[in-house]
Length: 79
Image 1 (cartoon, helix red, strand yellow):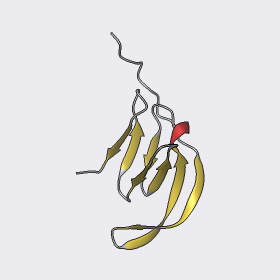
Image 2 (cartoon, helix red, strand yellow):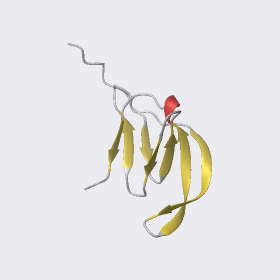
Image 3 (cartoon, helix red, strand yellow):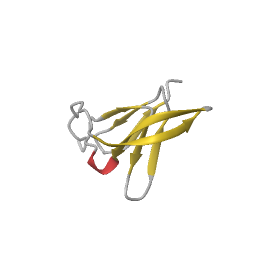
Image 4 (cartoon, helix red, strand yellow):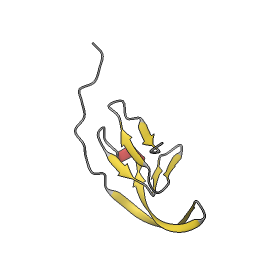
């Protein structure tokens, strides 16, 4: 078929630290990632900010982001 091969899990590189980000009533330090450099299989734990050329994503504490084989950011909020 047209399915991409399964991706191996990869640890993304932090490109910076946000001074303070406000999540759910409190200020927390947050890692900042370059979303354009996240490969399939990358995983990011919140709190995090993922910057793209055209947008950004925020992951609150307790959430997990992963990049699927099509390079989509999939955020698990732990429902």
